[in-house]
Length: 302
Image 1 (cartoon, helix red, strand yellow):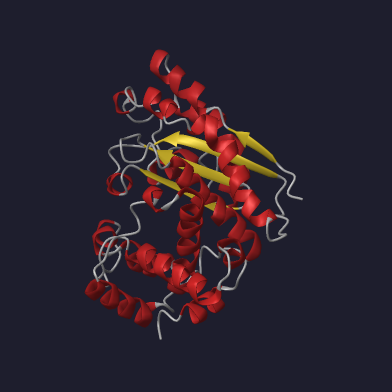
Image 2: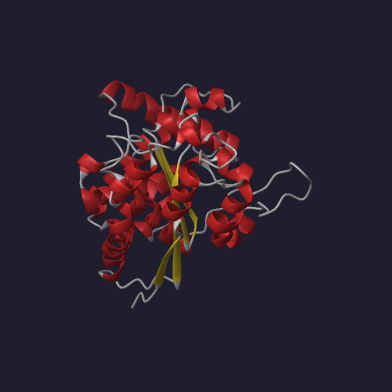
């Protein structure tokens, strides 16, 4: 059960070369991102721009908060060793094996033969990335995981948890595929709640990401009511406003809806915790449960 291969892109060697030689955007394109070409194709991002200066994998990476050689080398000069020292390059197999074990325990054979992992230095000038304590990830396409990190004291111990979070996305989307163009607020609450509770199950609440906020009871109840009224909204502009809160919505040009930072992640986390408490299921079982069932049996919007 669950026989697969994990392929890690050798980003560390690339970054070390960046410090000692001239490395251009084509090196980044072909050495770092070409192994993820199938993922980018699924997201309609070309490896090479169709017109000079056009949209491509380098531009898309920068939009995600990933450092590329088009940016100043000074931004990563002190970060390469720090990234290596987080130990995630030695621990990633352990994280994936521990994550898989939770699905082995319930007899789920994950329909993926190969997982590709890319651990990347983030752009410290990207305000949205830095607002989440300098790290984030992407696991929206089964078989492909990105971790984006500007190493610091907060996130250096939380990268195992971040990887488990993204791995949960990979598995969830083998069960209930993510419709990027038509995802609802309710769907997104479930997706992010599952991933963060999954990571917490493996590595403890102290390793929880900054995207789950500590609300007092009054703000929690208010936020749940806003989510309740908007949970059927669809489209990434609508979803982003609910998930990330007003500050990020304004920065990205979306219409604010009256929410604090990372409100959707916080409510999603409580939704899944309530579901597990009410049903007695494991987080792996919940990961393979329809979104509507999770919402209804959490009773968070009752």
